[in-house]
Length: 237
Image (cartoon, rainbow, N blue to C red; front, side, top):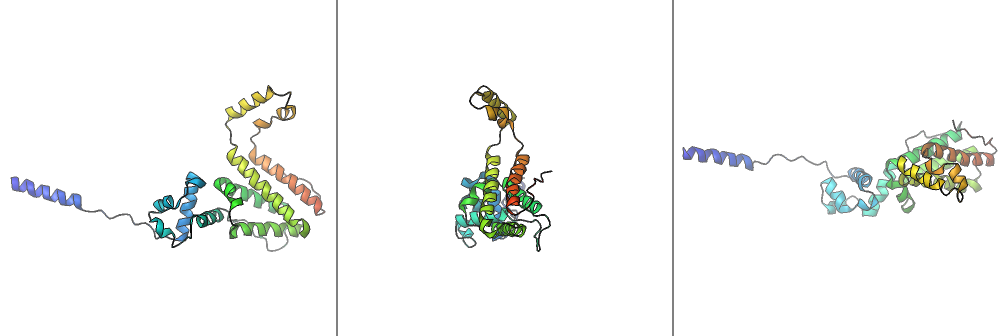
Protein backbone atom coordinates (compact mmCIF):
# COMPACT_ATOMS: atom_id res chain seq x y z
CA UNK A 1 0.00 0.00 0.00
CA UNK A 2 2.84 2.34 0.84
CA UNK A 3 4.32 1.78 -2.60
CA UNK A 4 1.00 2.63 -4.25
CA UNK A 5 0.66 5.82 -2.22
CA UNK A 6 4.20 6.76 -3.15
CA UNK A 7 3.41 6.19 -6.83
CA UNK A 8 0.26 8.33 -6.60
CA UNK A 9 2.17 11.10 -4.88
CA UNK A 10 4.82 10.89 -7.59
CA UNK A 11 2.18 11.28 -10.31
CA UNK A 12 0.63 14.26 -8.51
CA UNK A 13 4.05 15.83 -8.19
CA UNK A 14 4.68 15.34 -11.88
CA UNK A 15 1.34 16.97 -12.71
CA UNK A 16 2.20 19.96 -10.53
CA UNK A 17 5.47 20.38 -12.38
CA UNK A 18 3.83 20.37 -15.80
CA UNK A 19 4.08 23.90 -17.26
CA UNK A 20 0.97 25.20 -18.90
CA UNK A 21 1.50 26.94 -22.21
CA UNK A 22 1.90 30.70 -21.67
CA UNK A 23 -0.18 33.28 -23.51
CA UNK A 24 2.02 34.53 -26.30
CA UNK A 25 2.35 38.32 -26.55
CA UNK A 26 1.91 39.77 -30.06
CA UNK A 27 5.17 40.72 -31.73
CA UNK A 28 6.55 44.06 -30.63
CA UNK A 29 5.93 46.73 -33.25
CA UNK A 30 5.88 50.50 -33.50
CA UNK A 31 2.08 50.43 -33.74
CA UNK A 32 1.78 48.42 -30.50
CA UNK A 33 4.22 50.70 -28.73
CA UNK A 34 2.30 53.83 -29.71
CA UNK A 35 -1.12 52.37 -28.88
CA UNK A 36 0.11 51.17 -25.48
CA UNK A 37 1.76 54.52 -24.79
CA UNK A 38 -1.59 56.23 -25.42
CA UNK A 39 -3.28 53.82 -22.99
CA UNK A 40 -0.62 54.57 -20.37
CA UNK A 41 -0.91 58.32 -20.87
CA UNK A 42 -4.71 58.11 -20.60
CA UNK A 43 -4.41 56.18 -17.35
CA UNK A 44 -1.50 57.97 -15.65
CA UNK A 45 -0.86 61.23 -17.47
CA UNK A 46 2.39 62.64 -18.82
CA UNK A 47 4.41 61.96 -15.66
CA UNK A 48 3.23 58.35 -15.64
CA UNK A 49 4.88 57.42 -18.93
CA UNK A 50 8.34 55.93 -18.51
CA UNK A 51 10.10 53.49 -20.76
CA UNK A 52 10.13 50.90 -17.96
CA UNK A 53 6.36 51.16 -17.41
CA UNK A 54 5.74 51.09 -21.13
CA UNK A 55 7.89 47.97 -21.51
CA UNK A 56 6.07 46.28 -18.61
CA UNK A 57 2.69 46.93 -20.24
CA UNK A 58 3.98 45.50 -23.47
CA UNK A 59 5.45 42.46 -21.75
CA UNK A 60 8.85 43.33 -23.22
CA UNK A 61 12.28 44.35 -22.03
CA UNK A 62 12.90 48.08 -21.86
CA UNK A 63 15.92 47.80 -24.14
CA UNK A 64 13.85 46.11 -26.84
CA UNK A 65 11.81 49.30 -27.23
CA UNK A 66 14.86 51.10 -28.56
CA UNK A 67 14.83 48.96 -31.70
CA UNK A 68 11.66 50.86 -32.62
CA UNK A 69 11.94 54.31 -30.99
CA UNK A 70 14.92 56.50 -30.18
CA UNK A 71 13.80 57.59 -26.71
CA UNK A 72 10.84 58.64 -24.57
CA UNK A 73 10.56 61.96 -26.39
CA UNK A 74 9.92 60.11 -29.62
CA UNK A 75 7.19 58.10 -27.88
CA UNK A 76 5.54 61.35 -26.76
CA UNK A 77 5.64 62.72 -30.31
CA UNK A 78 4.18 59.58 -31.85
CA UNK A 79 1.49 59.14 -29.18
CA UNK A 80 0.39 62.75 -29.48
CA UNK A 81 0.19 62.68 -33.25
CA UNK A 82 -1.71 59.41 -33.24
CA UNK A 83 -4.62 60.85 -31.21
CA UNK A 84 -4.86 63.95 -33.42
CA UNK A 85 -5.59 62.19 -36.69
CA UNK A 86 -8.47 63.92 -38.49
CA UNK A 87 -10.95 61.57 -40.14
CA UNK A 88 -13.33 64.24 -41.38
CA UNK A 89 -14.04 65.20 -44.99
CA UNK A 90 -11.04 66.34 -47.00
CA UNK A 91 -12.16 69.09 -49.36
CA UNK A 92 -10.64 68.81 -52.82
CA UNK A 93 -12.32 71.87 -54.29
CA UNK A 94 -13.75 75.15 -53.06
CA UNK A 95 -15.92 74.68 -49.99
CA UNK A 96 -19.62 75.54 -50.23
CA UNK A 97 -19.79 76.39 -46.51
CA UNK A 98 -16.40 77.28 -45.13
CA UNK A 99 -17.75 78.16 -41.67
CA UNK A 100 -19.39 74.77 -41.22
CA UNK A 101 -16.15 73.10 -42.37
CA UNK A 102 -14.05 75.09 -39.87
CA UNK A 103 -16.49 74.43 -37.03
CA UNK A 104 -16.39 70.70 -37.76
CA UNK A 105 -12.57 70.66 -37.86
CA UNK A 106 -12.18 72.53 -34.58
CA UNK A 107 -14.93 70.70 -32.71
CA UNK A 108 -13.35 67.42 -33.80
CA UNK A 109 -9.93 68.67 -32.68
CA UNK A 110 -11.27 69.66 -29.27
CA UNK A 111 -13.15 66.37 -28.87
CA UNK A 112 -9.99 64.39 -29.74
CA UNK A 113 -8.01 66.21 -27.06
CA UNK A 114 -10.76 65.86 -24.44
CA UNK A 115 -10.71 62.09 -25.00
CA UNK A 116 -6.99 62.27 -24.18
CA UNK A 117 -6.66 65.21 -21.72
CA UNK A 118 -2.85 65.02 -21.60
CA UNK A 119 -2.64 65.96 -25.29
CA UNK A 120 -3.69 69.61 -24.89
CA UNK A 121 -0.90 70.40 -22.46
CA UNK A 122 1.62 68.29 -24.39
CA UNK A 123 0.92 69.73 -27.85
CA UNK A 124 2.61 73.15 -27.46
CA UNK A 125 5.80 71.44 -26.25
CA UNK A 126 6.23 68.85 -29.01
CA UNK A 127 7.36 68.68 -32.60
CA UNK A 128 4.32 68.85 -34.87
CA UNK A 129 3.68 65.49 -36.50
CA UNK A 130 1.99 64.73 -39.82
CA UNK A 131 -1.53 64.50 -38.39
CA UNK A 132 -1.54 67.91 -36.74
CA UNK A 133 0.25 69.41 -39.75
CA UNK A 134 -2.47 67.96 -41.97
CA UNK A 135 -5.11 69.56 -39.74
CA UNK A 136 -3.37 72.92 -40.00
CA UNK A 137 -2.98 72.59 -43.76
CA UNK A 138 -6.66 71.79 -44.21
CA UNK A 139 -7.69 74.65 -41.94
CA UNK A 140 -5.36 77.07 -43.76
CA UNK A 141 -6.60 75.95 -47.16
CA UNK A 142 -10.22 76.35 -46.09
CA UNK A 143 -9.69 79.84 -44.72
CA UNK A 144 -7.66 80.88 -47.74
CA UNK A 145 -10.39 79.59 -50.04
CA UNK A 146 -12.93 81.60 -48.03
CA UNK A 147 -11.03 84.79 -48.79
CA UNK A 148 -8.71 85.27 -45.82
CA UNK A 149 -5.74 87.20 -47.20
CA UNK A 150 -2.31 85.62 -47.04
CA UNK A 151 -1.14 88.50 -44.83
CA UNK A 152 -3.86 87.61 -42.29
CA UNK A 153 -3.76 83.82 -42.58
CA UNK A 154 -1.18 83.14 -39.87
CA UNK A 155 -2.98 85.41 -37.38
CA UNK A 156 -6.24 83.61 -38.15
CA UNK A 157 -4.69 80.16 -37.70
CA UNK A 158 -2.95 81.00 -34.44
CA UNK A 159 -6.05 82.70 -33.06
CA UNK A 160 -8.10 79.56 -33.69
CA UNK A 161 -5.27 77.35 -32.38
CA UNK A 162 -5.05 79.39 -29.16
CA UNK A 163 -8.82 79.27 -28.75
CA UNK A 164 -9.05 75.49 -29.14
CA UNK A 165 -6.06 74.75 -26.90
CA UNK A 166 -7.19 77.20 -24.21
CA UNK A 167 -10.78 75.95 -24.23
CA UNK A 168 -9.65 72.33 -24.03
CA UNK A 169 -7.21 72.86 -21.16
CA UNK A 170 -9.82 74.83 -19.24
CA UNK A 171 -12.46 72.15 -19.76
CA UNK A 172 -10.09 69.35 -18.78
CA UNK A 173 -8.82 71.05 -15.60
CA UNK A 174 -11.73 73.20 -14.45
CA UNK A 175 -14.35 70.52 -13.95
CA UNK A 176 -16.36 71.26 -10.81
CA UNK A 177 -19.15 69.45 -9.02
CA UNK A 178 -22.59 71.04 -8.66
CA UNK A 179 -21.91 71.56 -4.95
CA UNK A 180 -18.60 73.30 -5.69
CA UNK A 181 -20.24 75.64 -8.21
CA UNK A 182 -23.11 76.48 -5.86
CA UNK A 183 -20.72 77.21 -3.00
CA UNK A 184 -18.57 79.41 -5.23
CA UNK A 185 -21.59 81.36 -6.46
CA UNK A 186 -22.88 81.85 -2.92
CA UNK A 187 -19.51 83.20 -1.86
CA UNK A 188 -19.50 85.50 -4.86
CA UNK A 189 -22.97 86.75 -3.95
CA UNK A 190 -21.58 87.90 -0.64
CA UNK A 191 -18.91 89.85 -2.54
CA UNK A 192 -21.22 91.32 -5.16
CA UNK A 193 -20.23 94.84 -4.19
CA UNK A 194 -16.76 94.11 -5.58
CA UNK A 195 -17.72 91.76 -8.44
CA UNK A 196 -21.23 92.83 -9.52
CA UNK A 197 -21.04 91.88 -13.19
CA UNK A 198 -19.82 88.30 -12.88
CA UNK A 199 -22.17 87.78 -9.94
CA UNK A 200 -25.10 89.00 -12.03
CA UNK A 201 -24.16 86.79 -14.99
CA UNK A 202 -23.75 83.83 -12.61
CA UNK A 203 -20.41 83.09 -14.22
CA UNK A 204 -19.38 80.48 -11.69
CA UNK A 205 -22.52 78.44 -12.30
CA UNK A 206 -22.04 78.25 -16.06
CA UNK A 207 -20.97 74.76 -17.07
CA UNK A 208 -22.27 74.70 -20.65
CA UNK A 209 -18.83 73.91 -21.98
CA UNK A 210 -19.92 72.79 -25.43
CA UNK A 211 -22.30 75.68 -25.98
CA UNK A 212 -19.75 78.19 -24.76
CA UNK A 213 -17.09 76.74 -27.04
CA UNK A 214 -19.35 76.99 -30.08
CA UNK A 215 -20.53 80.52 -29.29
CA UNK A 216 -16.98 81.74 -28.73
CA UNK A 217 -15.93 80.13 -31.99
CA UNK A 218 -18.76 81.97 -33.74
CA UNK A 219 -17.42 85.25 -32.36
CA UNK A 220 -14.05 84.51 -33.94
CA UNK A 221 -15.53 83.39 -37.24
CA UNK A 222 -17.78 86.47 -37.38
CA UNK A 223 -14.64 88.60 -37.30
CA UNK A 224 -13.01 86.50 -40.00
CA UNK A 225 -16.14 86.71 -42.13
CA UNK A 226 -16.12 90.51 -41.95
CA UNK A 227 -12.47 90.50 -43.00
CA UNK A 228 -13.28 88.37 -46.04
CA UNK A 229 -16.26 90.44 -47.10
CA UNK A 230 -18.74 87.87 -45.79
CA UNK A 231 -21.91 88.74 -43.94
CA UNK A 232 -20.36 87.97 -40.54
CA UNK A 233 -23.64 86.60 -39.26
CA UNK A 234 -23.44 83.98 -36.54
CA UNK A 235 -24.71 80.59 -37.67
CA UNK A 236 -24.95 79.04 -34.26
CA UNK A 237 -28.08 76.87 -34.37
